[in-house]
Structure formats: C-alpha cells, structure tokens
Image 1 (cartoon, helix red, strand yellow):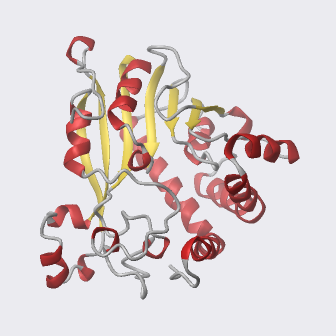
Image 2 (image 1 turned 60 degrees about the vertical axis):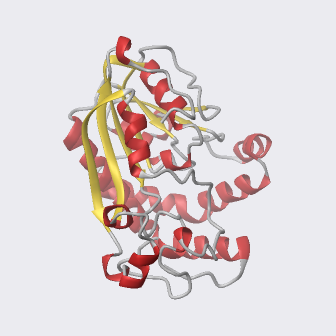
Length: 301
C-alpha cells in the first residue's frame, strides 16, 4: 500500500487514487470471496428479502445478493444511485455535497467498470444493477416496515455507526421472527482498524511512514477516509447480545503479528493481544423473542 506522498487530505486522496488504480481487482475478488462465505454460512438466498446496511456507492453486496435471486435492499446515509448520466451526479451533489460527488464520479470513471467486470468474472454471473432497491436512511431509522426482512447483512460498516444500540433495535424491528443477521465489523484496535490507507495490507505491504497502530498510539496520521466510532470488540458484543441470540462470533483473520514488537506491546498494554491482532469479527445470530429485547440507548452498554 502506498504511503502518503503529500500531507493532509490531499495526500489521503492521492493514496486512495493509487490504491484504487492498482488494487481494484483484488478488492473485487475479496468481496466475491466474502459473499461465497455468506452463502455457505446462511444457505440459499433466492426469494428472500435481504437488507444490506451501509451498501456504499458501489453497493457490491446488494448486487451479489440480487444476482443470486434474492430481493436486495441497500440502505446508506448518503444517496446512492444505480443509474448513469449527468442527472445522477446532479442528484448526488444536491444530497451529498461536492466532495462525495467528486469521489463518486472518480469511482465511476476510473474504477467501476473494471471492478464490476472482475466481480462478474469471479462469480460467473452478470450483476443486475437495476434489480437493487436503494434507499437513503438517517443512520438509525430504516425506511422499512416491521417484520419485513429475512436477513440483514453488513460489511465493514458498524465501525462507522455513531449509535450502534439504536441501529440494532431497528434491525430487530424490521427482521421477521425467524430473521437473521450476518454482520462483519472491522476491528478498530487491529493494525488496519484505524482505516489509514497506508495499512490496507499490513502483512504484505507494510507502511514505511505511518507507525504500526498509530491510531492507538501517537496519532500522527489522522487523515482517514471516514469517521470511526472507536468501539472495542467487548463493547460490540455487549450491545449485540442484548438484542440478538448470537450463534457465532467469529474472528475472521489475524494481521500484524510480526509487527507487534515487545516495545509496542508494552505501550499498548491496555489492549489484549487478541484485540491488536484480530482484523475483524463476523456476527451471526437471530432476534431474541420480543419480550426479551431490552431497548438500548447510547449509554446502555
């Protein structure tokens, strides 16, 4: 992963551009592999109502779900459109502002075609863009009726949610009694958890400029693509267990062991080794019976 070549957000965007141009095929294959694991874990999806929380401008998970014959519903806090043309960017400019419009335009012009083509090649099927049902939400309240969803999925989104307990209650509301969750969270305390672009691939392309775990230590490089809530794994687990019966809490990968020196380990002694080395965790479960659900607020963890 390229280190920042310029200071501040200009350096961030230069690094993101380089990363996109050199890594979009890997990105597509990683997403396809995640979806294959989802199918293996959760079974057949055709005919099911599936909600993708935080679908993003590429709405890739929603696309793969729709390609499998399910009804894919993607929600995001920013306007996402699955059409082309100038009208799309005019609508995004009005809804999301100049910076997000430019990022969407750059994505569409430089990366999208090759990324989607690689994903189609990995999955062996076409991606039905027009079949995805896209919505904007306010970060908490979902524009869906009660008990209308069979499965909620999310990939590396919950670390960006400010009121996790409120969102979990909304998921419980829209899920059917036998509905399920399949949520992957990027672990904040991991080496890449600070979301600095220089640590996208810490074990294969370690940064030469940004210190390991800088986001937990000196915080000299604070320019990152998006805001993080900073929650730790045990905090997430307490929140999820109050609303859902957890079938599996799976650490998906380890990263950074070779970089966790004795000096860094002593400096970060407030964190366990598991917290520092676990890239992320996958949460699978089902809604607790209605009578058992405790309404949460942001202070009740």
